[in-house]
Length: 192
Image (cartoon, rainbow, N blue to C red; front, side, top):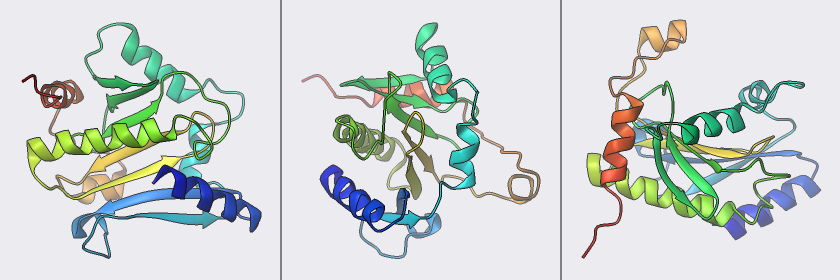
């Protein structure tokens, strides 16, 4: 998948689309239009507003600050680190088991061109294996933000957004991220 994403993102840029949004919609409740697992790449003429907001000019890298905070003290929300990629339960996640997958160090350039993309997708697969082990086959969305400190966000759709989430932008998450991280760490590779 990393090779396909890399080649298709290059084709998009050559065709005049500077931003490529890679996404996974798994399960009908998460917007999947096909019954089998697949990813999609949307070719965009500019970064989407959510991506732009993450990297306001002149501001500290929010992803770097988040990783430093999570790995600095308690590690309560850290789940896994593999080949320079970290998996964290999102602090203040919108839904149970919301996850962040990112290079530990601030990367230069595009995630599609990064030598760490394969490791990030491997961590994504492991995170989904652990999540499915805990909760069964759950609908979910995942996407790559490819500006600044590129990263993958994972949003399992274990609950439904209702009026408070949709109308007020206030998310009600019934599972503390520390508890989500602990459960996902427990689902790690089993010793024989």
